[in-house]
Amino acid sequence: MGDEGSQVALERSVIIVGAGSLQNKLLASLIEQRTGYACSTRLADQLNGSLPATSLALIDAAEFAMRMPALCVSVLFESFALINADEHLPLELIVACPGMKGVFFTDSSEDTLVKGIEAIFRGEYWLPRRVLCAHLERTRTVQKPASPAATLLTPKEMETLRLLTTGSSTEHIAFELKVSPHTVKTHIYNLFRKIRVTNRVQAVHWAAQNKIGL
Image (cartoon, rainbow, N blue to C red; front, side, top):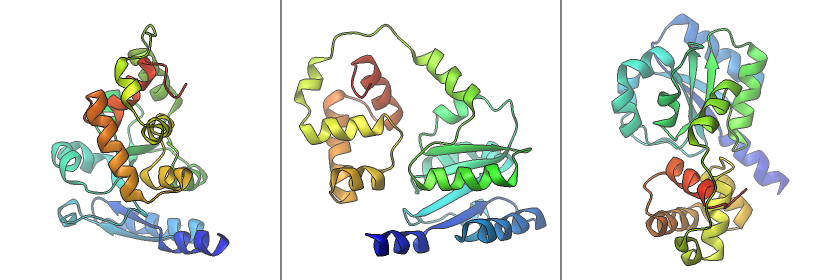
């Protein structure tokens, strides 16, 4: 298990998406030195194919704001985070893109950036407390009895849904369930169909309303 964990760590990489500026190149060098993960810079126009599931994209907030519709549709990796974000970043930008796992502000320290990257690779979210609180207030509802649809979920699908509510990645769910990522994707597809949702955010909302994963 230890060897497998080391191999995964070696395969992990970070890609900074934004202008090929000296600042971003220095940031890439810093991340490599502090985390040990390979880190490179790439222009948004160069995102013409899927990236490995072990890659984390750090998208410059200015680039994200200009190309948001394209990025939300065409970015084919599961996890990305914003860097150089304004502290008044609208909550809608985060909710609209379930793949967004973290936000780093312009004044975030080096230690914060490193800790956040490590947390995201562990399958966690790295979002500001105010964003989480605002999202909770906007989505909190009076709890209802479980929907009949919940009884249609298999034990594996129910466990997959519970893990989705914690923000777990596909790889982390596969590890917890001791199945392949492909099997997890099948579980996710089936449970989405059964509870009639189309993305992870909607599934989490559905689970909260039906007292699943609490």
